[in-house]
Length: 420
Image (cartoon, rainbow, N blue to C red; front, side, top):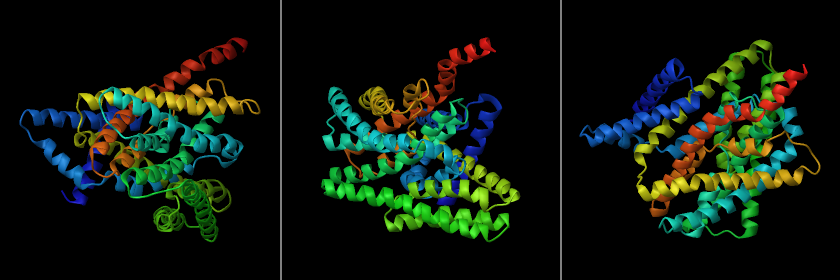
């Protein structure tokens, strides 16, 4: 199939699965779409074993569609911008210290912990994965996925301050994680040699450069938005920020994801308050909400379908099963340690570490990074293990997030009811 036919097929499947989920399953949209896509993919595999070769056509179509390029180049910027539009900048500013520590130190600590535990786990099941590729796995699985996290938070009654921490961390930690992944993957594949100074310089260039470029985009678009009062023109301006701005960030070798987050925060707060009429705000919200839902639907359908192109066997499934508690344990330590230190000068919501740990979902970004690795046995192992962790994260952690929050805060709610 050519690119348009693939796009048409994905859109049709997304619409069909969304309808089925809304009509019968009633699951959160991201979870429902991915679950139905997985069932659809596994059904095709089952038919293939019976001699019906529909699976082969799906494998060829997905093989011609570079998931890593589609997500990291085409979808991610728009999804991050849409998510950041509705984050309150004042709330985010009040939590900036916590978010900065979790998005930097937390990611680095998680990367090292996952690498060490994964190295032991791979060896235990008979897989010879070099230490550097264990670090690669740690880097690609350390950042939480803002798309998955923001989607799940909509249905979980998380305390407002804690929700801001979770959303803020997920919006910013992927920038650090992606840069760290590029450095370690370059060393592991032999395509790059980086010293400590070079790594630090690259992190500053990508991360700080992305933030500054995003602020520049936000200020420039704010001036354009203030100069007109026509919602069609203003929506086009924001669309240009996402498409042109993301492409420019890549050309400048700064973090496109961070640039989109900062631009979205600026336009969604200062731009919304001082540069838009009420009519424009309504139209802009409607447009980006629709874009967000549509791109989310495509993304999670693609994640579910990717199972047909990943080679699984008993050893890889065992390694993936071992990686799930490994990633959760590393997340618990990388969150719990900084929070324990910060409790000496600031307060946290009850059960903050538990919710931050369980709510740190992994998603399409981790799969895309694994798919971007050069072909080889290490890539096959990391891709299968990453996909297993992502499926567990979205389907199990995502589906249980709202019940977990309700259970953890039930005593407090019952006490308030009794005292009233």
